[in-house]
Length: 519
Image (cartoon, rainbow, N blue to C red; front, side, top):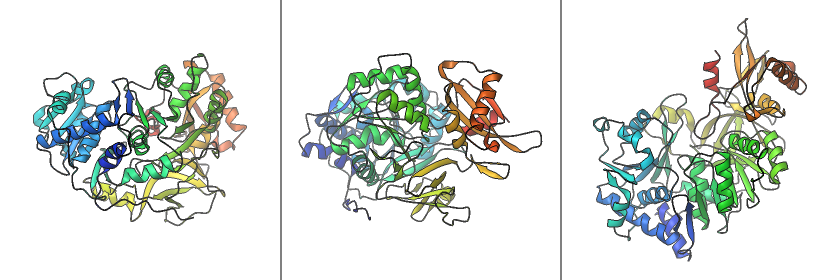
């Protein structure tokens, strides 16, 4: 069935759609954002977005010029993000967990004229010699500072702002993708991209309404969290719940208890931590949550089953990317398939191909490509990488998948994570999914390691529950456990017990760091 096209007018500014429209629909007094830093209504959000847009214009920021956002999850993020878009500037939210050298690179790469940052993050910025920032003219701090203060700019600016005359295909914002294979790349997203994701996933899959309250463990600075906590709730007139702190289980449960979200977004490693915490704590109530959503990496079936048994709720696993902005394959409520990423979202297309770009039959692992009107237009200043990733209407995800006969997609690992053992391709995810079924295992990561004959064999890195130490007897038990469920060439030759697995700030497993560690 062909999806109904999404109509976005030629002259379009995303800020008017996500912010102003809620006033026209009589939601001015409703809370748009609740947070540990304060709450604001839709009327207050509208006025502060206008004030910040005017403040940027007063600082000399012109259409298409970049505004760097180094902000914790707080109302000022929403104000800065949409204020920049409304005045025609391009906000660039960045990971708050990086080093000064990373920020120096991105500030110069983006040629940002203004940087907005939280007071707590200012030391990371001030550590950069200002003379090494080639384009930056103004630093704005949310909180106390000798720099320009966000509150002062807001107070002094007009609450009325005529939106910039942008089109649906103008640049709206940038998001930097992870730089695991080199410097981070800026994905350039357009004014209409957020509308596509909100219509197709938030409304189409999750059936979000103005009654929904969204809480995301994934932070606003990356694509998954930006949708969950910002433009999804604003698209339907719902409420966003923001927490600036780290996603420790006790803080997550406390936030849920206080704010009663109806939609909870997280990542597999956090779901595993919540389950481990709930084993020795009774104050773990998720009864307000009608849907729990997972992304960032594949959700093991064992976590799905344990979560459903403990909290009487299913986790809807899905896959998206920074380039695609949000989800493109997802499990639907009432039709979730444990261990699967789900089915293609209406309005998107997917194909699985071999190394020669030929389609592979169902059941065969290949490279996943997707097609969507929300895919970034290009990587900023990365012509060759753009050509290698975006092929006409299709984008290479870098993921290995297979599709079953019912249209469900099953993750087999990153293209560079696949192992060839005993002449056969082995998915590390398949072995990890078995290991995590063992009662002692909280997390598992499988990589390839050469034996004494220089042949590649599977090696498993294991995090045990409750921080317990491992021993040779348990290692042998885990090897036999895998052997009872998988062929002998998929049994880990080595078991290493580790305190934690290396992950990106978005919760994605970094197998390459384990490969470097255990060379």
